[in-house]
Length: 146
Image 1 (cartoon, rainbow, N blue to C red):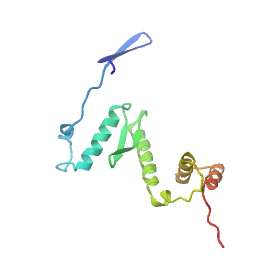
Image 2 (spheres, rainbow, N blue to C red):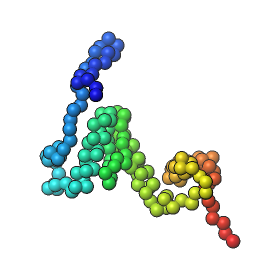
Image 3 (cartoon, rainbow, N blue to C red):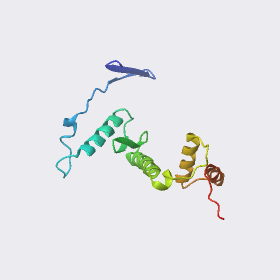
Image 4 (tube, helix red, strand yellow):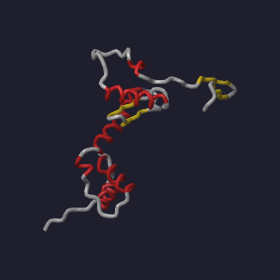
């Protein structure tokens, strides 16, 4: 476990920061500004996952969750708008990976999982180069007409 107070020396200036010991429970979300009276169990779970994820990321971070898992994080940007764009782009890709057309891609036999993942990434991107598109076509089993 890290010490209660962490210190760093930067250019002759010592900065100290207390360890983040916040614990999340049901009371964490009791005063949420919303028109809705309460959270469903699923919404509460997703909010807890997001809070725990954000606890361990940089400031100005944005976290999107679904079904109890983090599906997009945007962090490390000066602007929360940019963090939001990054998180949403990652969440969009996660959702597209769940689409039946993506799941049903006809990979050629013997293709290893990392190669399949790379092919899926190329399939979902809208900025792939001609060379990358050729590589993607090599991964897929092409249907031939009689």
